[in-house]
Length: 229
Ligand SMILES: [Zn+2]
Ligand SMILES: [Zn+2]
Image: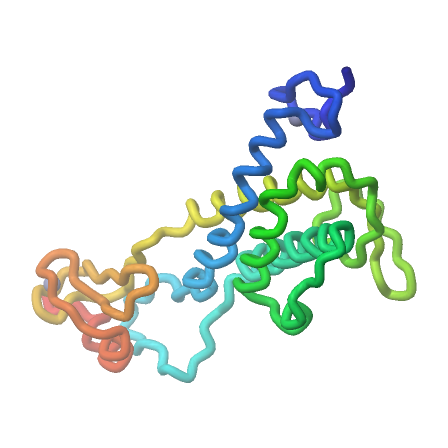
């Protein structure tokens, strides 16, 4: 018997690089990474904090601040899944799709997760691979080689990284509300109860159900930001 490389308090005895509990966790995480990549798309944009000082709403041209933490997480999900999928392709003499190199998006992540999910047992046995610019650096042991940072990462470590990315995505989504409260007062009932559902274009009043488009909300910013009372 040896120790699971995750070395968690919950790890079971094992003769493999990962114990059964860690494998189950990784296997469950991999298909969900497809959604973890896709779901935060809506959250890349944040609205400025409440301004009830009569400032007009932002015009359509004003750049909206990017959630750089979400963007970085998406990039890591894409990077880690496609990297390991390509390693598996090599091993199984499969050709990665030719669009892969040009695509950094949900499709590539979906392809990669679909390829890895049925092959986790194979991946777990992979000896350390030299990977360039791998985004998760557990031990800080990256070696710079002609401007490229190289890390030696085993397949088992890769599986743990994917489980970690899934946890990270969930906690990030959990912290971000699916319904946004917007600054301002309802034009009909004057209550400060304006909301917008994630992914929806409609702004609505939680008190009287008055609805308008987000464009209208922006256009009449001054009106909504002043209480009629
Ligand atoms: Zn374990
Ligand atoms: Zn209202």
